[in-house]
Amino acid sequence: MASRTLLSKTCLKHSLVQAATKKNILNNRTTIFPGSQASRQATTTTTVDTATTQGRQASFQLFDFTNRNKEDVHLVKFTSVEGKRLFRNAMVQGHAESFFKLMGNFSTQSSPSHGGVSSLAMVLNALEIDPKRTWKGNWRWFSSEQMKTCSPAETVQEHGIPFDEFTCLAQTHCKVQPRRGVSYNEFLSDLETVTSDTTSQMVVNYSRACLGQQDRFAHFSPIGGYNKAEGQVLIMDVARGKYPSVWVHTKDLFRAMMTGSKEEAGRSRGYFVLSNYEQAKQQSPDILLASAISSSKLKCQDCSRKCHSS
Image 1 (spheres, rainbow, N blue to C red):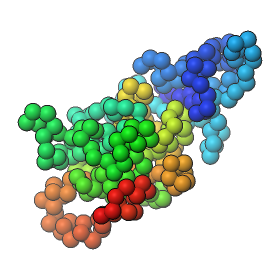
Image 2: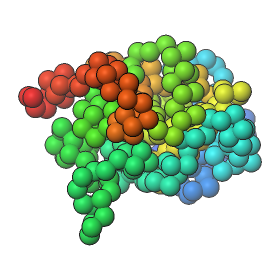
Image 3: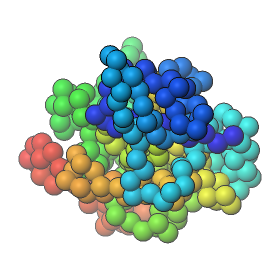
């Protein structure tokens, strides 16, 4: 069954959220606050009217769906009965090809702000790209700790990486096509292509708040499948200690990607199509010329962080 998540405003103290109980909820609705694997996908209400803190009554709103229609966003847990049904149908439709290599390389982000670098490492391993350096022992493997970001490690630890810096980092290892400000139909076309092919992957950069989830910053995660008949897309969430992988409607995900980012002066988020350049060349020699024309690298001075000159 589909479940919805409960989000507090960023200014709301975590301790205050935990203090709310059934007695605080209107209309006898119940609220499940994230505290265990089973309850991370919270259910029901979006508003708490009263809470008692140190003998005083406090009124606050847990979440306001801005830029949304009145209906709630439905997130279907991947491991639920409904989630499994959606996945089976996606396989029948031929749009789960990207899932299996991702699943074999599924990793959990090492810190709350490492969604971008962890998603990239997971995708690079799924694409079987050689990092050309050892990870541990004699093994060559991508890990988030190996990623040399443009921004200092302390900045990434606190704020993560923005859209352009993800592009900077990805293009040093693979062919990347950043998609920002594209139309909904373009997104669906890319989604259909990537999920029906084993040689490319998609990473989405979206606002959790638009999906009713908790997070201060934009989040990155790979896409594992597409149920075209029902308009559902599978987000393989790398923040596995916080949220499970979920199915979400393509329109809701597109809206979450197109929402302006405070970290980047209001520019929209987007997604990336990544592929193994060497494998693509072997499959089609003509791709060499096409790629040389279409994949001009993002220079560091064009990156939003303006980290280095090149």
